[in-house]
Length: 81
Image (tube, rainbow, N blue to C red):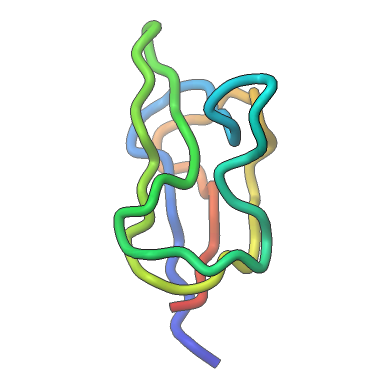
């Protein structure tokens, strides 16, 4: 088994899994991702920050629900690198 890499919120904000309401989510469990690939968005004070993968690997868990508020350092994704 590979190394587990946790992706956490860098600041408080609202988490979004999709680029727009009518678009598919950026990633799903089981997806292979590249380093720096966009995984989701975090909206803070009307500014959207891209959440990027810190490593290449496979999404093994999506912890945060879309359109929910997150606090600084909340766990969002788990990647097996």
